Amino acid sequence: MVGPAVTLNARARSIVGAAIQEVCDHRGWELLAINARTNHVHIVVVASSHAAERVMGDFKAYATRALRAEGVMPAGQPVWAGHGSTVHCFTEAEVSGVIEYTIHGQGEDLPGSRLPGGDGSG
Image (cartoon, rainbow, N blue to C red; front, side):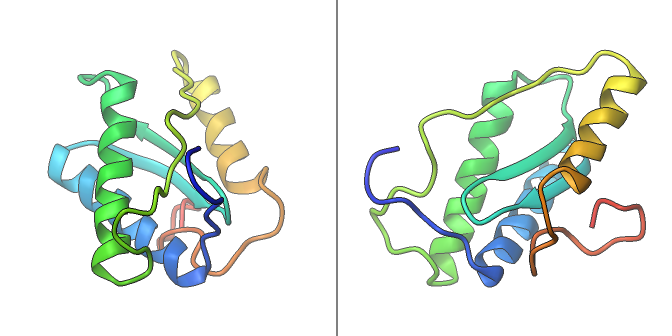
């Protein structure tokens, strides 16, 4: 990452979560799980008609725009690392495993880390 490390507080994590949901709604992608941490975000999404790099790029763009619009991140300050990890799942068991890891494998829940919802993803 270029620039100082960014720490996402509860408000920033909530903004990021809403932005991720917005891009999924806009693109017709299915958001299965999200867990925004203080220094990274885990997302499980079904977006099979798009390359993982495009999906990640859209997530970063929407989240950055939302953080700036809310005054949480100043213009010009880098927010995300140049890339991130993308894992492709091909079976229901693999999908279940990454959802479980995203929701329960990140340590204690943080305020604003997950979207509200009754399916365990929020």
